[in-house]
Amino acid sequence: MKKIVFVDIPMKEMSERYAQCYAETGNAGCLYTGKVIFPINAVLAEKLKAGDQVKVVILKTISEKGNSGKNAGLFQQELDEINGKIGAKISYETIDSEFIETKKNHEKRLRAMLSKIEREAELFVDITFGPKPLPMVMMCVLNFAEKFFDADVKKVVYGKVDFIKHEDGKTYPENPELYDVTSLYYLNGLVCAMEAPDENSALKSLDAFFAL
Image (tube, rainbow, N blue to C red; front, side):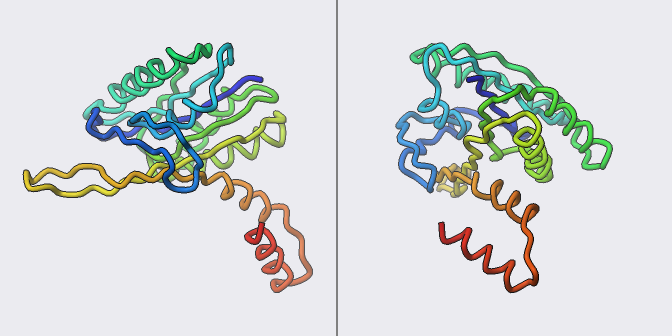
């Protein structure tokens, strides 16, 4: 089955010093012990198999300093190194968008992302970086893809770090945590599809969801 990966690229300058080991952190169940700058690559290190057809969609927000372009290259380099030991067939496609949060730009992003979806594909998403409204657009993409393309939403992840100031006056990323937030996607779908005679019944339905 085709795998499609959506990854938000950060606009701030990134380097190897941001690389973290996310093994056995958060709730993602990731066991990959290598260090990665981009959290989704720790997931892909475990999910990719030799011969897999993988399309990686790089969501790049244009910034004045041009860091997103450099970071996109850094992401590709990191995943290619991981895949060197796996042998999946990876292709890269980029969606460039302006850092403007208007309805017109949201529509542009949405249509561009939907153009990358293929029928019955497995979808993986990293929402760690990028503009804050982008995960909301991504949620719409996933809903559309599952409903009309028979896509399978496998994993939506978010990587967290604390930035700690050291004696040299610089801040360093520490205490990494990798979270599987796919349940938020399904919660959104539940709320949209939910029918109930009153608010108390609806709240009980939510209770049942969180009890799973």
